Length: 121
Image 1 (tube, rainbow, N blue to C red):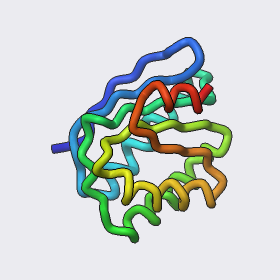
Image 2 (tube, rainbow, N blue to C red):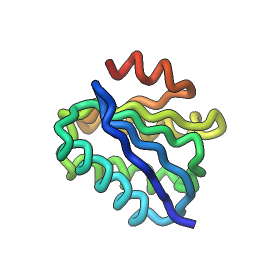
Image 3 (cartoon, one colour):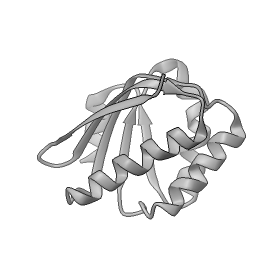
Image 4 (cartoon, rainbow, N blue to C red):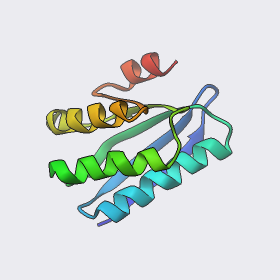
């Protein structure tokens, strides 16, 4: 299965709802590139991504490290990104969050949409 998503322009942020799964770093990277480019094209600097219907299969530390390095190449330091995920992934995703933030990105993971939105705005 692959990653599918829909987008919506909200008043103060770009909203993405995704579903599916992928264990391929290339596909996760493509997904990240597409949604950040769409966000920039729409003129938003804030993005809320609901990934509660996604399965995270990239669990290897090296893959998460490579993904954070890839995101740095997208020049998204000006974006504020809130991601809502399922509780079972929070432990592994904290490594990714720290790695991405150490590279100058502003990414934070949440378990609740309302908290993500509060942080975002």
